[in-house]
Length: 449
Image (cartoon, rainbow, N blue to C red; front, side):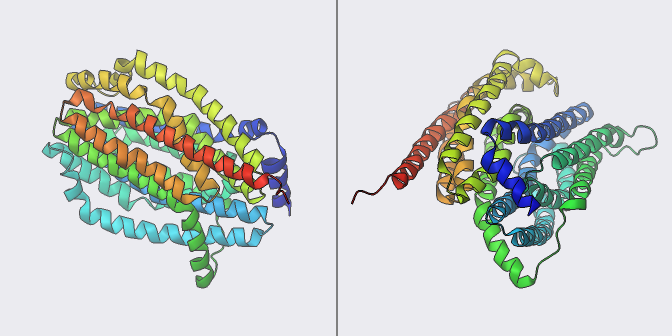
């Protein structure tokens, strides 16, 4: 009952700005720490070896696949639990969380086995240097086999967020990232009593940080496992709501793999530039990703209560906030691309390719707000088809073919695919969103007898 009261007072009655102010900062701070970890991780690996930096870029899509499966399942748990809380069914909400834990374990086992078998074959599609291949296989195998921590932490984090608790997940992710940052130089270079493990040390540090975050969220996030029959029932609901997130992230992974293959035809340095961009992107996209995380349970809750006007207001305010923050990313990518790249690599070829690439890609940041927020809106209200369609437009129908066609002209033109795909997807998202609002307005109009 106390949980239900909390939801009513926060998700349904508080002003949208108060909700964002209360929920967003913890999420954004946690993601800031995560982004700093990514930057620090790349920094230390770059100091160790330029081939190691290429290896991180090659394995990045694999890590995105892990995130897609783990976080996507967690998002499904989040949405289903929020709706069950709105209906006063707290016991079923706990059952949903328990089923999510089982799904996380099953997915981890399957992924660890398959990735180990296929790792070498995959790496050779995106790296040419034998040393880069060796480093990528080593790093990739360790982070995949040791990914149990992120699978469990993703479920337990969403259990807390479904109840409006953003602080504990924040603390857990900060603790995990700090663990990772501390262990990185110790294990890569072998400082003090620690052995020099090179690239393997960076992977071990990553896995250790994930387990720390899982332990913190699991203490109060763990739920008793339901019966096998209940697990099957809850799993269907979880994946019905979560598969758009999984699908979107997997598409993200696929297009990076394809882009890496295209760029590998030019040079390993071009692959490195793409990897560095995504490391930096994770930092500048923090407000956008934080808002996505926060509005999912709030939108889902209010949609279940048929409070469509509030859903509309949540989206309008969130887009204004996200656009304001994204301007900073645009300015940095346009004005100081060289210093951003130089944080990780002093390679002349990387700098030569990266500076114009960053300036072009930076133009995509503002339209990306619309192309990324609209799929989350549709997923939150249970309209999975528009969410998937927008993801397909953005990552398959636009980015990959445009990138490939422009690569036929030259490497410098390929980066135009980023702003082009965001503009097209953003326009499609606005069209579908306005159509949904019209449907709500039509349903609210009184019938004339």
